[in-house]
Length: 409
Ligand code: HSE
Image 1 (cartoon, rainbow, N blue to C red):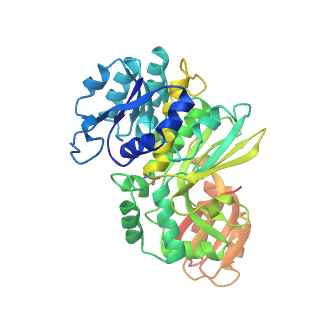
Image 2 (cartoon, protein in one colour):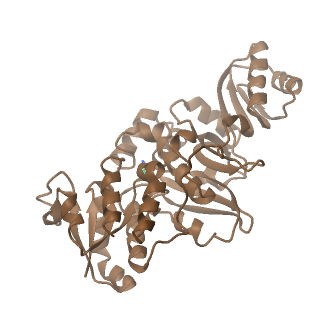
Image 3 (cartoon, rainbow, N blue to C red):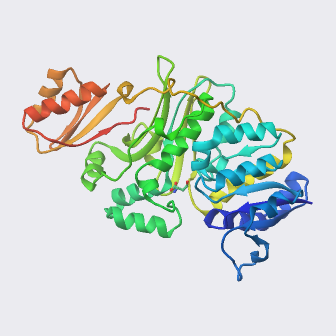
């Protein structure tokens, strides 16, 4: 008999317990191991819960039990999760976590501690909820030189943007609904302001480019400023507005990780069709061309599925899986600044007379792609050209109300 401990009995932790007992026989058969959840660590009591008798309040109880080999960390946040996870790894227990903040901020250290103690620190659930993406990146796609990853990494904002797009729902009402459904972070500003997607692109960037990318190195812009008018203009240009987390290797070898709302064309990009709480991650590699991973990006059982998948794998591993690791980075020289960002741009503007957009584009060396009475799209250009174009419009008496890059596929 091997014991599992669950840290945190909130949405994800309770999902881990529920899914484990629902499919226990199958999991035991798969791992050829008798298993039980011996402890659930939480500050609260759960007297009416069928597993309430497993609740403990002191991490030491788990650390002191040598039969606990596997720990599911579902607490969220860095403190005290970091210390708890570190202590578990040092005590020879493998840990699976859904905690993207922990991995984005402390992943390099915890991976090193796991290696030193010949155990595993797995985090499939930290990106894309139910979607297998971490493991495919370092196993199935390991033969590729991966040059770019881009995706919809936050279910809450995708849900909100879809409600604005399809139902003309107000931002605040859509957010309240996402919270009610258990998708949003404890502090939903982490969703809305892009921090959650930023943590996830840090994890994907670190894994793909093998050096820790810290959240402060990522240009991050959320969806707070996206208005119904932006969404409607995008629609008239044949695009959806999505919060896109992306990382790309540039010609000089540096990488550029970003999180920002982007227009995503319906005709050319599958990502434009990803709706509701679903996430999708597109990966470009020299062998695969491109491959998309799609599924539920948030919620109780989808996230629990990924946590338990990691625990199952940890039971089968006899030592640290070194392909799922990366080095600490003592400087950020390998991360490019936003000056290096290029993309087509959509401008929403005050009313503009016919021909003015094209005339201004010609004057500044930009290529016009689409126009409407209150906006236009120019072809891929640098940050500098994008702002020169906006300034030139202003001189013609046309104000830019919003500027949103367009995702190129
Ligand atoms: N708040 C996150 C989301 C939960 O909406 O995607 C899953 O990480």
